[in-house]
Image (cartoon, rainbow, N blue to C red; front, side):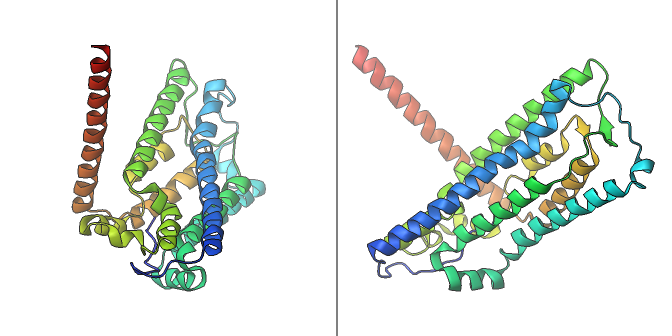
Length: 285
């Protein structure tokens, strides 16, 4: 995701309290829509794709062959629906990040540009998840159904997904999550401080200019590390992998800055832990 453009200048007059309250409410609602959709997207990508294998909810062998599926009208119709849903998400997610469209949204919604972007992304994802057509009976690209891998592979995939989501959330926390979700822009605007990006260092501003999907590798693991690979999962993983590859623009300097920020976080946490231990020992003495 790309960060929002500057819509105000530092030192600009602060808006009235009713205006700030209205902006805050709208921004918070957009944030909640984005956050709740993100939680549901975790379930959509990981929980449903792995739990059926662990619980034994899948057939041992696929009763449908690829040759038969290609002649099935219902299968092709469902496949077409999934393609349309993916196109809707990709077009919305990319079109609203296009500078010309972004400038238009800024002119209409002002400081709420990022919040509107988050809301529209949440809506497109909700539509994708609600109307996605699954193929629980295959044909599978692969389907591990023999012991002991039928037990251990789903557990291994669950572990990989858990680690990947943990890394994703950690990276998002390293970045300014409130700014990515559009909340900080409204806060700074109401204080007359301008765009939060204008207060960042040149290295941070450069990173935010390139920031689209900093969690590229982890998302690839989540998309492809599943014990049973159905046609709809193949379509989802292939499309999103291609999209992520095309828009992934972070370079070596960006990764260097990201690593330095992560090291600073660990140093800060270690200092706080050492301080708390010293305080506890001092009180005991």
